Image (cartoon, each protein chain N blue to C red):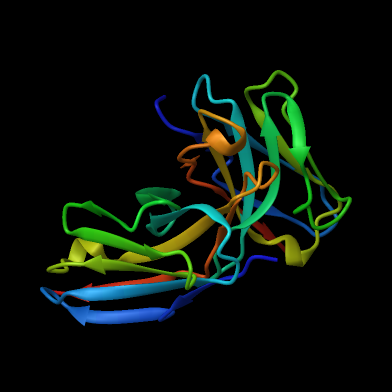
Length: 116
Length: 114
């Protein structure tokens, strides 16, 4: 496809379960970002990859959150021992460039996670 | 830490009105500012991107201005239509090699009534 895709689109988890969210960026895009968007709020940065290197993970809220991009394309955001406050939409974005030349970020449709 | 604020949080207008959405940011050392549109259940669509050296950008009925020194941007929508109903988000990218992420405001939820 031409855009960023994410799967699953919706995920319901019981408190304490582990979840894995997938992002397929636009082919050839170097930069990949994960954001968390709580209901009624703007997205908040979680982590950033340049190819397979995770250059910034300052936004990850706890050590229960882990992200990887082993081959520099598909990325997975994993949340261990989910809690109710993890309920949010998780957005993935990719961009062609990197560093100060990072241009427009293209966003996927998001994964809505509900933790019961 | 950069903080981005959008006013108003929600806005309802009749079709045909011209309207202005406001965005302010606390740290003027930005690389660029973007306005996005978000429809329910969908991702963000970039509307306009203004580089820090620019004053405004236009696309169709949309015009975005940037006053970097005062930390403000406005999105002007002319002749609003029901199809413009969505949440509008502004986001800044900071002027820092390490700061590749965007910092978003809370959004303005716009409803245009027929």
